[in-house]
Length: 287
Ligand SMILES: Nc1ncnc2c1ncn2[C@@H]1O[C@H](COP(=O)(O)OP(=O)(O)OP(=O)(O)O)[C@@H](O)[C@H]1O
Ligand SMILES: [Mg+2]
Image (cartoon, rainbow, N blue to C red):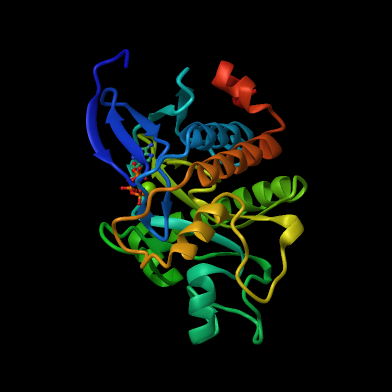
C-alpha cells in the first residue's frame, strides 16, 4: 500500500484501514460467508466484483445522495473513502417479503411498524418498498426496530431524510437490476454525516453481500428463492448436513468455479461492462 495505513478492524469479509484523519481504505477480500459463517475457502475475485459494483452504484446515484467514494485503487478491491461519523442504524429497504421481514410479518403482520396486507406469501413483492431499519449489533444478529426507536437514535428529521433517500436509492437500483434479470429483494445502506452535517452514503452499496439478489427468471413467490450469487454454496453446504455453526466446510473446486462465475455474471449484467475491463482499469465503472 502506498501510504502508511493503520489497520482499524476486520469485518467478516473486509479489512478497514485509516489512510489519514480524513480518509479510510475499505479492502474487500475474497472471503465468503453463508448462514453467517465465513468459510475456509475463498471465491477468487469476489472482493473485486463487490468493490466494482459499489463503485458503479456510487457513480450513478450521486444525484440522489452524496457518497463517500474518493477513489478505487488499481487492485480493484480497495476503496478510498471519506471518513464519516456513521449513523447508528442500518438502513434496510425491502421490496419483497424475505428473511427477517418475512419472519416478523408471519408473527405480527407487521415489519418494523409497517402494517402489511393480510395473507401475503413468502418472497412476494410488496405493494411498495418499505424502510425497515435495524440496529447495528456488535455481536450476533442485527435487530429490526420500529420508526420511533430509529428516530430516537438518529433524530426525527434525519430519520425522514434517510428513509426518503434509502427508498429512492433502492427504487433506482431495483429497476435497473430488474431490466437486467436480477431481482434486488432487499438491501442495506449505511450513512454517515460529514463535517458540514450533510448526509453521505457510505460503506458498500447494493452488492450481493449487502442485498438479496435473486435470478428474475426463477422468481416464484410462495417460498424461499434461490440466491443469485450464493446458491451453489448453500446447496453444497446443505448437502453435507452441516450444522451451520463454526467451522464452515471447505468448498470443492466445482462449487468455487460456479460461484465465481455467478458473481462475475452479476457484475457484467448490472454494469454492462466486461469484468476483464474492470480488472484492467477499475475506473471504468465510474464513468
Ligand atoms: N465512510 C465511512 N466512514 C466511517 N466508517 C465507515 C465508512 N464506511 C463504512 N464504515 C464502517 O466501516 C466498517 C466496515 O466494516 P465491515 O462492514 O467490513 O465489518 P463489520 O460491519 O464490522 O462486520 P460485517 O462483516 O458483519 O459487516 C463498518 O463499521 C462501517 O460502518
Ligand atoms: Mg458491515
